[in-house]
Length: 430
Image 1 (tube, rainbow, N blue to C red):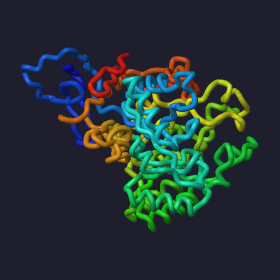
Image 2: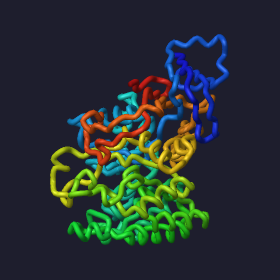
Image 3: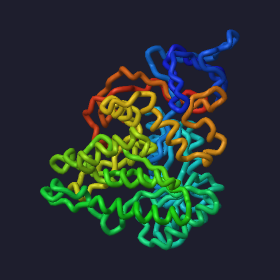
Image 4: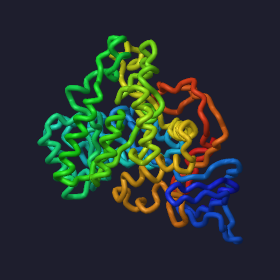
């Protein structure tokens, strides 16, 4: 199958390539950019005039709700939402039902995802059995089944000795451990500590819940030299600690969610359960520090933190509502909005959702490692074509995800995806 993408502005953030050019594909491979052979006869043509042609998005935080919700077809709906948002590779945490702590479950999930022929799926295995924080999982078996790293998802590790042993084992075999920095006992609130939470009578999560956990993680990384990816940093103090740790040379990376990047605790308004999120929305100074950290490279990646929540779980008082929001179809647009608001060049901004998150996963991507998150000759043809000038209003009911709760409902956002190709095959077309 030969495909020609014509007339678009081609951007590869990793190399800095940014020109109007045609892109030629043969099956799953990019065979030419700009200099197309005269005898190249495409079987299909995609008109990208006025659009940007870029690598497919790599999203490091996507809950698919399977295993656990197979009867609802959640995997199919969420993978369809992914390609509609230009996302060609998704990393899913292990907090499913049952937890991804056995090789058979991982193999089943990957097989189901491959049958859909939509986005690529890269699961994280549970760090401890059933995420209970006591007994380490069989990391070798989970890796052989396709896991790219190991995580506790939203469950803090209370036992520091278990964390130390996990990091020692992971360092021995070159695995990456993915941790959300949150101290168990301080992190049980429903809103960020501060004047607003106090005034509303909501239990607070202090910044110290994040910073104490970060200090613990960094001390253990110093002693084990294990690779750790920090999930969804949320505070200015957290950004400062990560910046210091990176300057020291610790082998860490981190990400931030679209929610923390654009919203603050003030957006909770009158107990709006759409704003019930983990981590909780913090103050404006924290949001500003997160934006600056993403721009200067302290934060490696921007993630959707896609967490589909059904109607019944959100139609509750704020403190009882299930945390989470849909985000797959908003990631590209909110990245472009951040670039506009912060004065970040578009080509650089696109790197935080393509090559940089792919770099976080690194060699665990296997045969895709060399070209994931990139648009280069000889690389895999995972491509997003979007119109940067097309503004659209977020209508939750129009989203493909089964979780249609989003804090961005009613927002007017830039950039609409026109086509998504995965392995050279058209997975979505507007």
